[in-house]
Length: 155
Image (cartoon, rainbow, N blue to C red):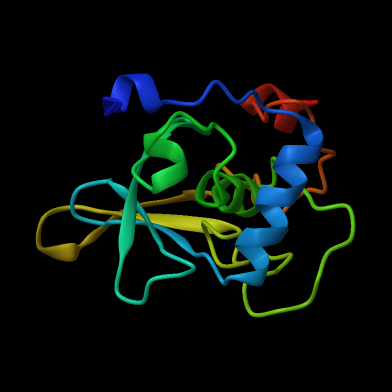
């Protein structure tokens, strides 16, 4: 019997343990999440297939969907979402592992504490405090919860 995509979707639920495993995979596999400057779209590299990228639907600091195989089939704890939450400082791993993808400086401002907004012709029209690190340049250490939320950052 052939299952449709709707029938094949999982009903996995997020938990601290599952977020920890996804975060460890993201670190181990060198997952990077980037925002495309021109469109605001978020993309993440595949940790297993060179040259492949997945799109993430993110509003505020919440990952709603990811086009990776896990995300496509309904798993909310994919490694790409975990990497975004790690970079945003909403999620931390129990035992940080050193590597090129782990860092303590802010991913949004690269540790500077300010961001620039550009107008037409790439002219800087505003310089303001980074909204992620609130101008410190460092990511806050925030404990893991069942499902990371922006409220966790403010706590």
